[in-house]
Amino acid sequence: MELDDRTWLAEYRKGSVDALAMLVERYRKPLFGFILKMTEGREDAEEIFQEVWFRAIRNMDSYRDKSFISWLFRIAHNLVIDRARKMKPVELLSSRGEEEGEDPIESRIPDPARGPDLDAAGRDLGARILAAVEKLPAEQKEVFLLRTQAELSFKEIAKIQQTSINTALARMQYALDKLRGWLHEDYTLLKGATP
Amino acid sequence: MKCTTYRNYILLRHSGELGSLRRSLLARHLSRCAACRAYAEDAALVMTSARQQVADVSPAAIEAVLSFARKAHSRSEEIRFRPSREPLLRQWRPALVYAGFSVLLLIAFVTVLSPVLQTRRDVAKHSGEFAAGALAWDDGMDDELSELSGLMATVSADWGNGESSAAGSEIEDIERLARELLELEGVQI
Ligand SMILES: [Zn+2]
Image: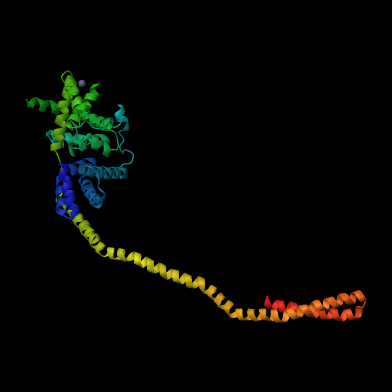
């Protein structure tokens, strides 16, 4: 996978826009899926998606990272943070206390199992999970999405969030604990259905 | 170790970041801890299900990205083309620098050295006068000085003989000679 990225990048540097098209195609879904969940709506997400690639293209010559996808998501992470700062400066990455056991945002999150978001999402577990993910605090949501949508390693996620691997793992554990709690009935049903 | 640590191991195993030693420690723990077994099952289910639900971006956004790439590429083509002209300038740059430096040096040379040359010319022009002056000194001064010393000797003798009136007119002669000598020196200086 990584070798392929390098090949396409080398081709693009030689002048092949088709090579870049291959890279855009490869990462369009995980990148857009991540951005969409981290932003307010589709319009915002499409704008950021394009800006990520514009920045990547502009800085292609200075790209020296081992992992292209990691670099791409770091650009996305920075743009999402910038956008969030402009939108709601007070709530930005406010999950500081949560890793210490406090949960200041928890009380404000409606029960997704009974909320309108999940009703709209239907009974499909994947859709229900992603609808519930939107209720997670920003940093936990980001770790969850980087892990599940972009399939980045915790080492790469920690690098993007400029934190330790242990913190990234703790954020993932909090996210999973909440999702497990919210989706408990679905699990039970699903597990009961599978032998 | 706490279950939290083993749950980190579960996550790391899922992302392929767990070494073999910790992998075997985890396996041993899972064989004894039902809560962590349930956690491992749920975590795998959530992560796998979430992965399958991926939204897609519009074709217009993709086209905008590729169009930007094409423009960026054509710009870089221009940049790549330009160096074919740039090396020529780069080749000539040292020569131009040397040429410019030489011109400056020439201007500096002319500006700084022309007064010196002028002075030398003046010196050469006046050197004839100096030589003439020196000759005048040689020819005239020696005579006048000898005349002066002669007069001084006479005056001294007269003072000794008490002939003050004769000495007065001779003193006038001495003063006149002295003035002439000073005037002559003044011209030379
Ligand atoms: Zn345990």
